[in-house]
Image (cartoon, rainbow over all chains, first blue to last red; front, side, top):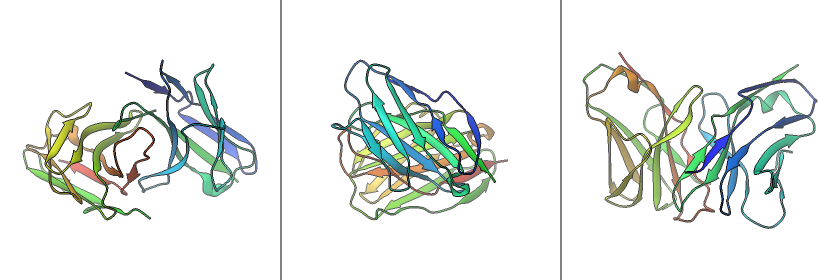
Length: 112
Length: 114
């Protein structure tokens, strides 16, 4: 079975600072990768996904993630964070036609 | 946009009760999922359904059952609630099978078993 490791359970940063949320996965086959965001008291929303093609994928709100096959990583980055980015972020890998395997989440807290 | 609606945001029940959590999606999605979310454990799949009346166990099905009588509705049933089932429950749906399909989530039901 595939597994997803999010190396940091909590990441505190100051507003306008850059941030990187790390995600590593275990798989010996081709993968599809996702980042989801969960704002307080809400469900998960899809932030971005890697299916194929360019290894750098972007979201509409300034986040980007890079697929690195050799390092089996899919780290999420943003060059300048806002208070409104405070949320929990989940990395997920598509394991089968139906199942997503999620990491345990990283709580990003942006302080003024 | 896909809308996944969970019938209750907060629910308090007693040990031993039979509990129903309801989920409805409005985009004719084939697949529906139930997860529980606990601090430090992330999301764990309880059950999923890939068609009406079809269901498959996920990673932690013990103590739960599901029902999918109509395509848009997927119910999670706690046959005899216990305190260790206190959790956040998330419903999700996806358009079809296929590893590239993202899942769309409801806002969750925070269930407390006293």
